[in-house]
Image (cartoon, rainbow, N blue to C red; front, side, top):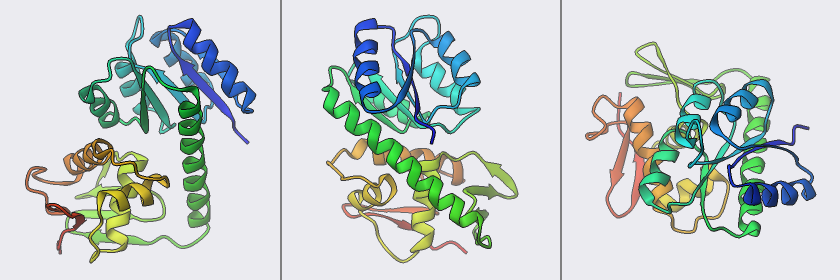
Length: 236
């Protein structure tokens, strides 16, 4: 079982603290201290998770995130000392799976790490099971969605959806008549308890719309029911 985690953090004290804690949890930890080294190591190793600080020398964390996402869907947990919602939203928009703000408790970090890896194992298991069965391909409007192989095409052009974006779309397609609250979306997609952080849901819905909608500001595939939640649009 892959238990390799990459820590990208230029503060040696924080890096060592995370390294020692996760090592005690049974993970195999690699630590690097700048963005340039992070990209080299991430290309040459197979990691189950990358913990990525945003403020890094040589190549900053946001740029690292964007580059890694062009090559890999490895889960990424970003760390931000700024504590600004815009940084968190931007990071998630570029494909991060979760974020944690500095200063943080080591207990919270371990909980987030375990949750991300648990969700990844859950999706991997589902994918393996689905690959053993016949494919289910759904056509809705201009979209062709392969429900089992995590792929979406629009007018026969492949869309690069993140795992979370695809999972949200699949949720709505699976139950086209149901309205989902943000809490339900988070619980079903993230497989975790919802603590009222709407920013995560908002960012993922916005990014998904930017990829699948003709006019993201006037969505037809994912409709908003103000004060309630979201549902699949009535698209033929």
